[in-house]
Length: 140
Image (tube, rainbow, N blue to C red):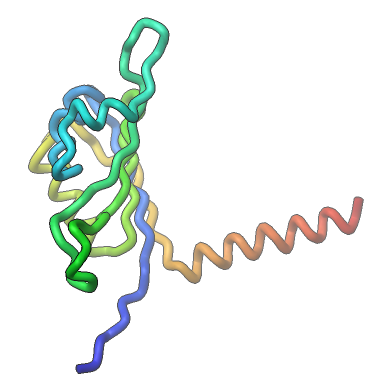
């Protein structure tokens, strides 16, 4: 059986949130077996104990490629203040995450920015920066 290789496309989806707490309540189930309380162990708080930020993985049960794995990481979610940033590596996952946001948060989250870059585009940007940096180092 021949497998078609899918190209990796990185998506960064940025949302404005009405409430970070409401977003955490709505999206915590995407971390699968981890409870909201468990997720909060990795959170940052200010001196008064107010929530500042949290990053956690969006997970699903099992893994198609490796049956011995318990789960698959679908993306990364960061909630910070009135902002949510999700990073995924495919068009399908980006669409699926948008649907999850709509289902779980509705109008309490507004998409502000969506960046889509292929691996080649990301490497080109990085190589371009390296080239410029090398040139500027030579001229100093």
